[in-house]
Image (tube, rainbow, N blue to C red; front, side):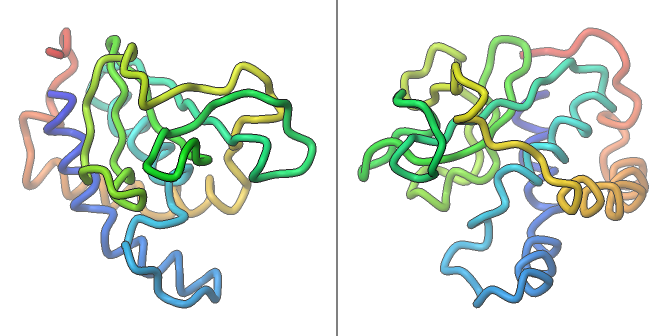
Length: 164
């Protein structure tokens, strides 16, 4: 169920990512998911909650990437070292729908023990949702609910114990 929800959420979000990039005034990125990890993870967390799956937003931002951060290795480990990133944790798994911006597969469901992911221990190193990000997720939420109800009734009606 985790992989199905993650894959469906990513597919749904792809056209919204381009709109988010346009709203930021940024040039189109090479990978559509680039710079969307916090918003996308907030969205995925809501989608999992709607399926009856408890989920938590996790993130890490290494000190080399932002002033005021505390020295710790955190975020997503890539070929270039630790990178600032956000993902969701649920049922003992990391669920990531934007890792392809770092050369990883587009949808990852891995055990929380996966050393590629390390949440920040210090608040200063966490990526936090912005008001604009929360509004952006809320603006598309009703479209998601309609989409899932129509195309994925097994997700819309899953209020029992989720499978891993």
